Amino acid sequence: MADLYLAEAATSGFTGYAKDSLTHVYYDQVLKIHGVTAPEYEQNLQILAQDEQRIERVVNQALKLIDPKAESEEGKVDDE
Image 1 (cartoon, rainbow, N blue to C red):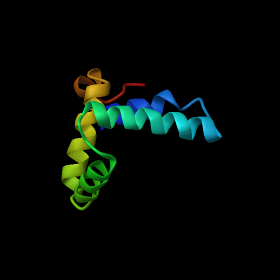
Image 2: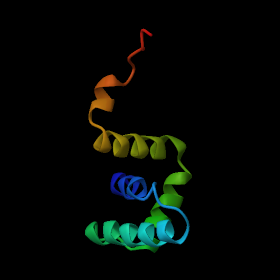
Image 3: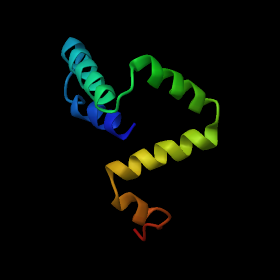
Image 4: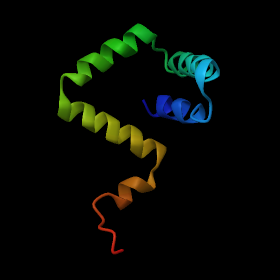
């Protein structure tokens, strides 16, 4: 999931067909790297979506992989 977030971010500056095509290529590469097919990923995502606490943990873990310092900042209150 973290890698798919990164693939989405990599295409954020594109629009229309170019974004759709490049996003599709990136997603296919990420799924191939992890040995998962698109239908398998979608099926697992649907299963996770039925368990709010579990998907929240998975999403939070993915975000921590992307931004490790987010874990250390979690729960801190901004003084500004």
